[in-house]
Image (cartoon, rainbow, N blue to C red; front, side, top):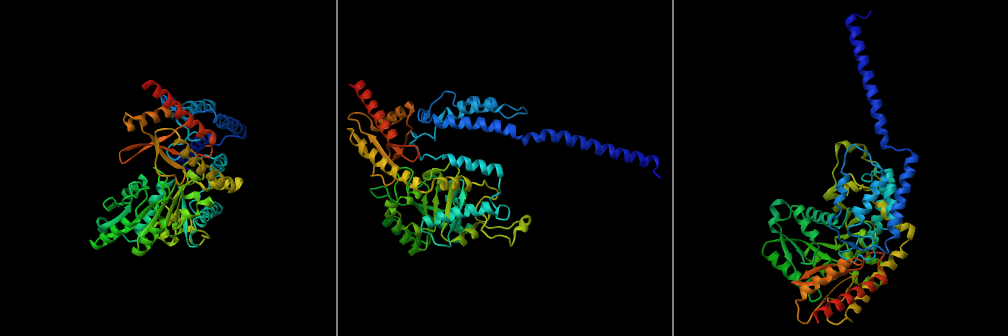
Amino acid sequence: MLTLATSIQYNNIQNFYLTMINKIKELEKLSRLLDPKESIREKWNSEVLDYSNIFINNLDTSKAFIQSKKNGKDIYNLDIDEQAIELTSLLDSTTKNIDGVGINPASGGHMGYIPGGGLYPSALGDYIAAISNRYAGVFYAAPGAVRLENMIIRWMCRLMDYPENSFGNLTSGGSTANLMALVTAREVHNIKARDIEKSVIYLTEQAHHSILKAIRISGLSEAKLRFIPLDENLKLSAEHLEKVIIEDRKNGLIPFYINASFGTTNTGTIDPLESIAVIAKKHKLWFHVDGAYGGFFKLVNELDSKFKGIKEADSITLDPHKTLFIPYGTGAILIKDKENLLKAYHYQADYMQDIIGKEDEISPADISTEQTKHFRGMRMWLPLKLFGLKPFRAALEEKLNLTKYFYDEIQKIERFEVGPEPELSVAIFRYVPKDEDANLFNRELIEAIQNDGRIFLSSTNINNVFWIRIAIVQFRTHLEQIDLLLDIIKKYLDDTLTELN
């Protein structure tokens, strides 16, 4: 029999649970808004598809670079708050404040820096990956997703003529890939804190700046950096490299890492990989090839001779978001011996004990800096399978020929000089006026090209000489855009020289 006190206590508990359940149900009404019904999804799908089609259909007439006083400031009007807003308004703001300012990386007129890709099927792949939200970091969680990404890695290893025991990881880009290569080399060579000041890294002034960032991030900022001189073609001098390594070892230092480039960002130059490979093997140094820009030109059979020696590298950086035209956020690191990757990155957490013994494949989380990761393999696999490799080979060969074409045509215009003959799809050029400062003139020339906006180029400085760069990498860049650039340059010269006279 319940006493009055226990009856009151029971009623209080009942009221508490009823209140809690009512609160949960009210919260559920709101939280279910995060899982919209099919009718709403179809409406949003339609609006996004319309936006996408308009954007792509207008690329032929859109500028490659748009300057604006506001530079997208009105996006701040849509800061995060409690209220929902219609998708139409958000897409309108995207068009105005994001698409309508700065560089348009999807444009065929984008020939500055190293343009990214943006294949349409990649967007579909990202959509599929985001909808399913597969956790592609661990085989146990998403075996099919991990198999797909590992299959892509193995294809890239075969492409680079790597052995069966090689492996790698899909990264967010070349910078992370370069960092992973350096950390793997550090662990393999057992570089401890006490060794860092004596450790030596070899590179050139033309190495990508992500290498220097990787050195700092990896805890090697106190290591000695040897910037090896370049030859007349802006390539790493293998002869100087070996001399410096021998000298450093005589002085009690620890040479351990060589960074070579297959396509520098500045000029597209390819370092002498065969010679460097011999030196690295002879002196037992880690040999890394940064092929972020140039690596996928391996698909072009005519360039096979330039790739001699790359299979001897201990690690290779590739960037599918460059010369495989996949969207930004897609890089890759390949390591010749997969055991070296595991040595550098594998850890087992207590809460992951369920996966032990259930792994038919290496999990990306065991060989990379990332634990949680986007299923980025889908954005790469889908276009490669929908198109096949033939159009990719053709596009890369087309870019090589377009670069040669521009390199020849610009020299036909009086007073233009060029840098080394392009090995890939980057070239440098400049105008040399009779009585004016050449650096200033070319700075004004590129500003004029950028202000016009139909074509976007960038510039660089080599030994205090101002050069204009053309990087023909965007898959939408064709002969039409190159001829347009030549016309813009000729018109600027005609107008400028007429004013001066």
